[in-house]
Image (cartoon, rainbow, N blue to C red; front, side, top):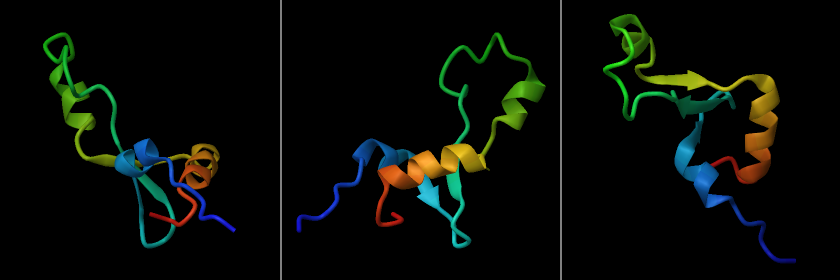
Length: 66
């Protein structure tokens, strides 16, 4: 039986926490930041945890909990 392949794009963008949740970087921080106010930029810092529905999709992409 061959090994299952991990979707490499997903492996680069998501990390699994110790409790099994999926962390991801927030969107909207690459360019066009002048048009956003300071509150928006501040709130987009760091990482967030995916919702349960999206978590199931991403876990299928990463079969070995990478």
